[in-house]
Image (tube, rainbow, N blue to C red):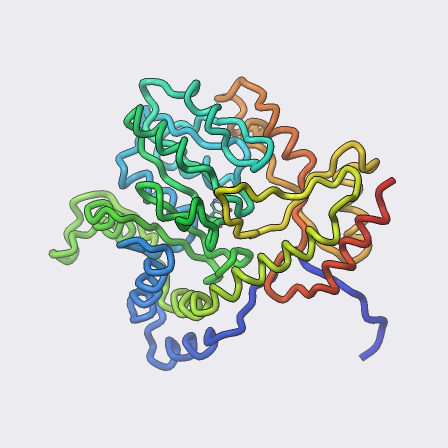
Length: 372
Ligand SMILES: *Cc1c(COP(=O)(O)O)cnc(C)c1O
């Protein structure tokens, strides 16, 4: 070995610290490597229990989980679906896959989630559903959203991809809406490499989703396809990893909350660094620990990212709001200013299971020293 040891702290990193290898080897040795096999059912059952819902249906990623949810609810061409402009692109894309139009809503300045007050003015005769997204893990305030949906006869799908472990008034994210979806991409709180889950308490919707994810085949008649379905299945290998991850999920949630506490302690009081909030109703999953870089700090968000990167600390900027994306801006003529300002100032700091207190102190020290 030669060369100097350089510190590099990634923004995210999976923690394969449990029985992942053992379960995957079991798939290999038993030759159950495709989308049949015991791990799929075990992962689904364990996941449903964790969220406290009747049904969990595994699929190949979080984006198609949203597509399945929309299809099961009958969302299609001519329909409108209200989504936050500030979200990962998958939320809006899935609406497009279903042939419907995403209608973009502005954000709450504190939680960065869809502002419930921005929803009602967007409702038209075509509106079919609302997709709240607990951004970076802070739960949406589901009460006003569910209330609006009820009054207008709309469905709610929670895109809880970033909110595994989060709670809204004591209820797990993913257990409140008619259907909710999760992602198990490599950087999510638990991972299967690529993977997703659709959860619901509704038996009929669950049955529909299972049919749609398996090419539309009639469960009672092999090779008979009454509807056009998709191959959105998860493999047994992915589910094996997922089951092992799920066994450590509580440990992962707890560590993320500890990391957030470390950051809060070390970053508090720096002028122009706005820390993430955790509202009274909320238990944050801290999928990402994120801060806003405000004017007072004296340096721009991009300058901070570059400075940290030069010191071996990887970060991510916030998502661009959908209303500035070339593919979505044409449909949306309003400038959603709260979301736009959050997006241009927001930065995700390293947040992952293996992160140590010393790392958080190092990162926080850099941020403290760099401002004016
Ligand atoms: C990760 C994520 C998804 C789904 O992502 P996949 O990569 O398809 O698993 C959807 N919505 C949000 C908000 C996400 O963060």
